[in-house]
Image 1 (cartoon, rainbow, N blue to C red):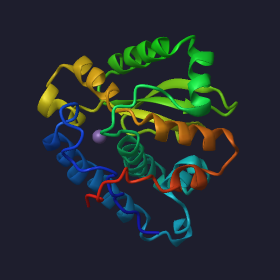
Image 2: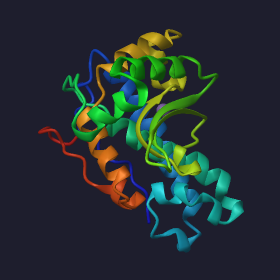
Image 3: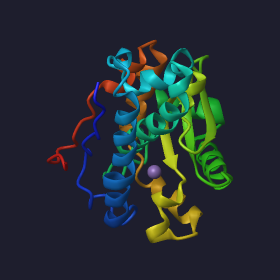
Image 4: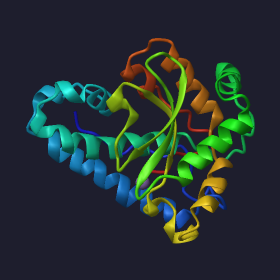
Length: 225
Ligand code: MN3
């Protein structure tokens, strides 16, 4: 398999003012694209991996040859994490959650606001570069977790359904050292419709391929490539 940079489901200017076009384009065209290129370099001489999606690579990392593991964790994680990051944002202001997730979040965290506060605190507390996650755990319960660098929750068997990039490259051009402003800005962009769809597939027993490969609606925009 040759891994490809997924098309964005919205124009690069459409997340303004919450996510600026210049940062988004640099982030997508340079950072994410580089992870895809390096992942392809890593797997090119290993045809046994040809049938795996990037999520399946990460979910089965410890059954892969150890010589590739750190590269697949880093470059594959970088590819999978950013792919989820893009699809879990939308230019349409969605303040409500949808479907089963609208019940599961308050059931797990007490209220939607508690969840939001806990996720924000988690994001603020990450040292250095990393990610904040809402995941479906192996017991099908919702979890909050952070990971360093490009590590994916898929490495420990959890299925991420929402993520926030806390690497400085994700926000420094506009927000500089004001990480809280980036986090608060990003909340305006969460694509709850998509996160809810991922949740439903994740708790249904669907395979990693099925959970993440389903085509994301283009939201009525022409695809920006
Ligand atoms: Mn990033």
